[in-house]
Length: 185
Image (cartoon, rainbow, N blue to C red; front, side, top):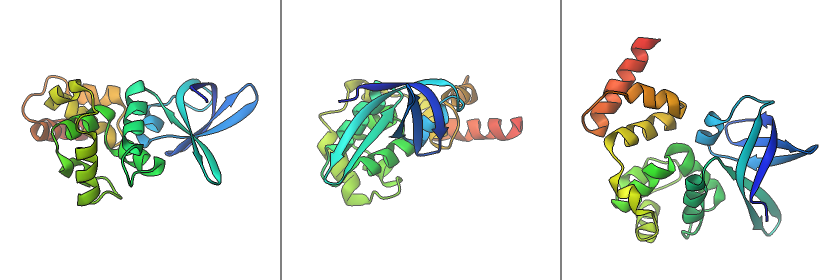
């Protein structure tokens, strides 16, 4: 019904934004990663949206990228994963890192998300195995480190700058990047 909203960002919290479109404020539920990437209140924004209809509720869910929307749709297609839990996942893991974890059947990565236990993580990995984009299988250690840093609250540009020029496996890159960030403060 609503493909996107474009207007002035009227309010912003870690889990929702209010977008003023022609004098009407639309409350849109967003991931923490999206909230961290949005500009300041008062700025112009455009969010891709999905309307979710439940028995007694209509809610808008917003995304900055097509990949985030795709990840949301895939997650909510899994039995036991509703929109709120899908956003919790997308608040902890970037879409590309999610696709990579599912593609590699790394359910342990999903278990790190609050609200997802071993069985649900395995179900998500199994149900989505053949549905994630193939590009996810080639996600490298630098991209995974950027994903982890953004999950910690850094903006993507800051995370990319922190890993620039680093090498090693994902854990080593993360250690070096965190050391670099702490020394910069």
